[in-house]
Length: 230
Image (cartoon, rainbow, N blue to C red):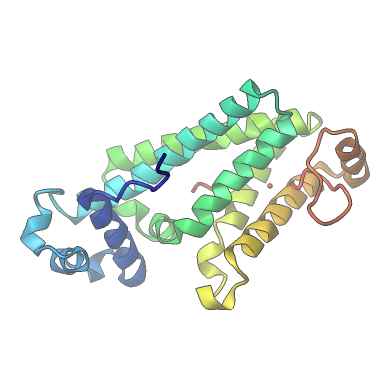
């Protein structure tokens, strides 16, 4: 059975190149003709897929917010169905967000820089999807750390998102360790941030030894190895 991924559609190709160009040069610094040239079609040909740059930007930012929420819900449901501990579910959520942070850096830049260019309805939709994503994490974090107050857990989640979403500012891709090493580092930092906020490193290490928390790869069990919008 073939495991080859389906080739991206022309619409997906357009969005990928638009995200890259918008992130590199700014929304107003890129013309429709340039986006078309990047995917091998004429500028006017883009209008068969999108009515304009604004529609591309909206689909990019609404789309990634929706995908993060859908992916987070799927990971939580799969973990629950498989009988995973809350700590294992949290670890899976962190893994999924790290994949986003490493593979979709242009979208992080776009969100930070261009969100206010969206229409009110699209901007409100992005914020709504992001709030739901945050609350999904908050629920899981509080299951792992029941002594953490809800407001503290929410602040921790936002802080960890800020940490993970710093990937566009980590330097040139060639100056970073390999993807696997960077992902492992981000995972340790995120889990450590949650464990540090809990303020009970020793208790967390004990819980890890009892099977409640994932152990830190390559070392002794640690606090939930643990992990703003987008």
